[in-house]
Length: 610
Image (cartoon, rainbow, N blue to C red; front, side, top):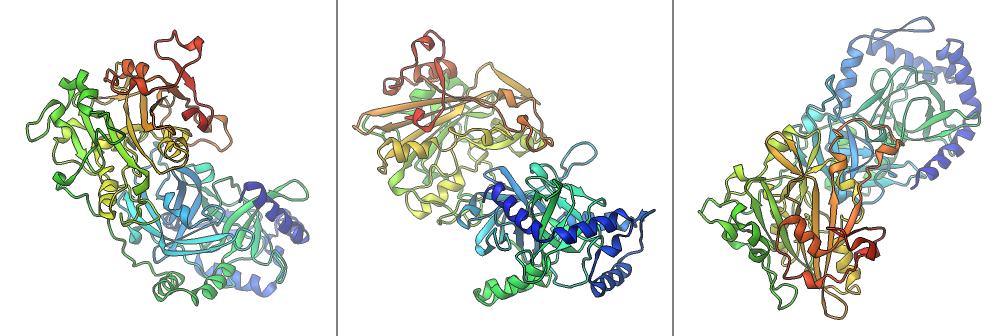
């Protein structure tokens, strides 16, 4: 659901609480916030519960809280995570127990899309601007999934999947307990929100935020609370607390009220509990037990780790040079001009004999640059199998993000985790052969191929915003496979790699490449071989370390241009030999570009790739 639709829902409900909000604002302005609550019994229960929880002085002239207030907030913050879809920030979420994660339905609306989501815990910045100990997890919608539409309770409850990075397990992350107790809030009280607005590192809205209204029973606003607080896009799914750090609402959205003031809306915790109890009856026994454990605040569920790739590398078929047609496109010929730079294997193999074969793809490492010259991947659209992220088994879902070294080659010849840890403020571990591309064949072969892509030999330093900025680079294989051959399930070969020339940026002892290239080979609709060459640069991003960027700033959208280039021009740029398929390139650059050493045209649409 689009932001405007959420705003419209909030605005409709704000109209139903207008009178109550005005009375609350007046009481707060008089310094008598406790008088905002019309339900005296609720106010008394809240006051008693509050006094038993902590020693505090609050009022018109003072607002003191014990230091334990900060400690309690930090403890709750461990269970709050930034939600991303394909690396792009989408909102906030938090654990409620038993490994179940709660967020808004408009943040995570679709069970099938959950495979492309990840959640990062502990993403907060210390005094040096560093995020010291984050932990990233996938989601496991197969194990547990419940959702209420945006126009209803706007919530999604999903199981946490495999841990991808970091050390924190469920015991360390803790849980934010759901409760339907009636003494957790009163109108006029302060609310506190732990959130990831705009995809930023964790932020907290404290103190000058007030609960203004509670929807009347039986009305369209019965399940929501309205409050003032600083929030932004990305705050959806955040926990809203009272001063005892008890959950009172799931932050849902915000809209301007009748006076033009921005008011927030959250789904009441009690409404969520009531709904979940009703849904539990229809769940499978294992899911029902898990939900009941979560509602009890139990958090002893242990998650399984992904198995490492099969290290019997002799069973890998590798890239097949005659995969497209009878014209062989061999890696030995492509690498020939730079054979002397190929990293040797532990077996003593050198040069083209040191090419590393994996399931359905192969690569060769440049010893001096410690990155692959290129990877070559065969993709059979007719035999494609998607792979489940959390278990690495065939399914409709993708697989996990754990990286491994290759025992066939000394790790000094390629970049490993120590580099990506040291320079994590700039770089992500970027696939060369994409995770999904070689996943075809038998189920066993697809599983093997998927895991093989997570070898560090297939990894390259890519700026942390690089992939999110590349609309056409990502998925060009699938586009050409589906549309470039009239949607028939044909075969293609993808060659890709960094440009390992004299244009680089130094990070430690590593010369990080500025550009990446890709060539897609296939048979066209008329059976003639075709080649499409692309080039993209991350140079304009490298001056930007990971930092907080306010939502809506123009610089928040990375400006990375993607170009179609000639195969011959790409050959000159990379120093590799593409002559075996240079004649397959049917793209003719505009006359004004032909005099350039590297004719290149900006890609403006998917059709530009055909």
